[in-house]
Image (cartoon, rainbow, N blue to C red; front, side, top):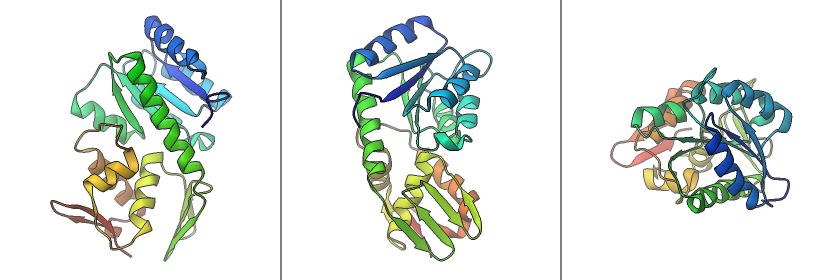
Length: 227
């Protein structure tokens, strides 16, 4: 994805973070929009349709978790990547973030070069996904990569990015057992370090939406999609 016209929404209630991180992203050629709380972030996301949202967790008025949940309900932002940038590194906070629909989790303080590397990796995967145009049809389930939507029977739904990617991966080869390593590499990428419960959280969400019987746990190995 070209940096020019690539919009990044940076959300944090600390002016220093907005200034320093915003400066480094702008220097790299990205179009940076800033917001100081969750409510402002939602308004600016609707207006600018950013490719990437970097979202702090602890903020006044509306925290990052609630903001992420609301952002994920906006159809025009279905392909927007959302990553948390926060000083809170506890496992429960990460689970809450992924549960809300986040794609990644970056703990601060973080060196500018490392942050830029993370941003490039996230946007690179976004470009790769945009170039994949195909449909997966399994019974009454249709996964449309081009429109980033799924249809289950007569019901159409838009899933958070990582849930969609995980479903598409498992459904691409029904019956095949995907190891946790396979899933992390294909869905989150080698550049991203996520907590051990991340996959389980996303599988639980998919079971709730697609059907518990569609996902089989292979203890000690991983998961597979059942037709």
